[in-house]
Image (cartoon, rainbow over all chains, first blue to last red; front, top):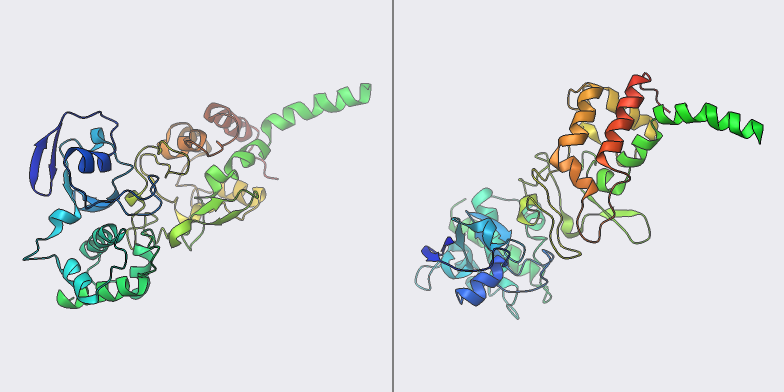
Length: 152
Length: 173
């Protein structure tokens, strides 16, 4: 199967029902997306599938044939981070960090759909991404910073 | 005993035309948990037999698909998850239109709704039955995936019950 991940097209020989998260981590060695719960319930594995946030633990390889996937490792670069990544650095959002790649990918998807969300809209959009360190106030602050940096 | 037999004989045809078996399906959590009102908040069933708001502060919004905040499709795909507790899914996953609210309503209220084209998607009762028998999202109610109790009976039985009820003049409780 062919799959484009972070701008690179791969020709892969994997089981059709392999979860996308396994494919990314075990086959392509992209370890940014994290395994949390395995049942859509935490958001740690969030990536973009054709531009929209999805939980990669629940999508199978056969469902992403020919698709474009973006992970935290392809969202920006160290020299040119995505505005959400830069805001995360500026606000020092992460504590343990395990959920943060999913948080960033969800926030980037939110701002792509809604460039100027209210605080209530931010909270609603981010509520499916859990953080055991409770970094939620900093997550919201970073999203607000990213909005301002984009001039929205 | 004779009186009982007569009573049963009289009751049988009425039962076949009753709205009760239809209401039992429509008010089952697999159906009613998404047929919610204007707040657009889907429901989850609890182990105690009640309901609670969908976890994670999810809101269907005016789009009824979460477009305003978090699209349903972030977690719900066009098929059920394979593990118990994972998100169920079906083609077109979304909340039904707000005028089709059934949650927290009585069988009598839902019966009147079901007959009203303004509140049933502009359908005749035959079209309502056809919708129940063919719409992927409705059919999901009988194949909800691991860990979720299916709606009662089968889609075919529910279609037959709607048609029999309609043929009897669609009486409401």
